[in-house]
Image (tube, rainbow, N blue to C red; front, side, top):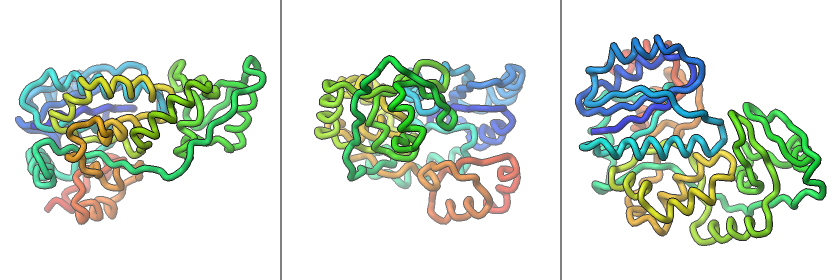
Amino acid sequence: MIYFDIQHHGNASILNDLLERLKSSESLVRLSYDGDIKSSEFKMLELNHKNSFSDFSITKSPQLSWGGWSIVNNMLSSIETALTKSDWSYYVNLSGACLPLKKMPNLLAAINRQVNSPDSSFCFSFMPQRAILYVPESENRFSHQIMQYGRVKFEGPNRIINSIKRREIDPAKNIMHRLSLHFEEVGKDSFFVRALSKEEKNKRNKLMSQEGFRVGRQWLILSRRQAEWIVNSSFVSILRKELQSIFIPDEIFFQMALNSKQNPLRTSVIKSSLRFGEGGPYKVDMGHIKQAINEEKLIIRKVNQHVYKRLGEVEK
């Protein structure tokens, strides 16, 4: 069985198509949503699909910020919830814009064909071969300004914010800059940014030296034993404390945890998410779907309803 953890943003119109593809007695589904979605839309979803799965629940997620620790915290909470359910073999996280290229239970069979042990998990990651560029502490820490940075807001000392404005510091695009500063999530899509203290730099350097810095995408397929280790490991608890103050931690936390020397199942971690483009935010057309099928990928995203309606062209 597969436990599907769906985190959805935006309207609910595409979810019917996704849930239809997951429909099976071999599926457990937890659907979390945030944003301005009418409760009536979810009542209709629950009515239409409540008998389609071994277990099905819909819940409103806590406040989430792009690039913030809240996303990792929500995923960890979802994994803990999943472990209260029995019988599933794999935990799979999805967004509402994901498209499984095989319907259940064929999707489960396809995952089983790609494992190398009963404990195999899937997570794409790599190790950047660059040094962390730390930013010196500001001379005037009490003179602040606020700026818009993509979809989020940063507040911090003038010198740091000005460096971000000039893109001398650009944590969304430059992976190493995500470690360069202390990013504190203070509200919905809002961060306070400051330089790290000497002690904080030393702790961060020690962690990266011992474990190695890894980055990838947030998309996971976890075996049950691997999920249990993530929830119960004392090392993961330490990692949670150390990585709460980096930017876009959902692309770093699980990658470092799963590949850590402390993980007894690390040799069973396959460095692929089984997603097309490793789950990158492509705007998908039918050409991408045909390519993903040829590459034996199992999931693709960002998919709209027009693409869903044309799936029959490649499924026949």
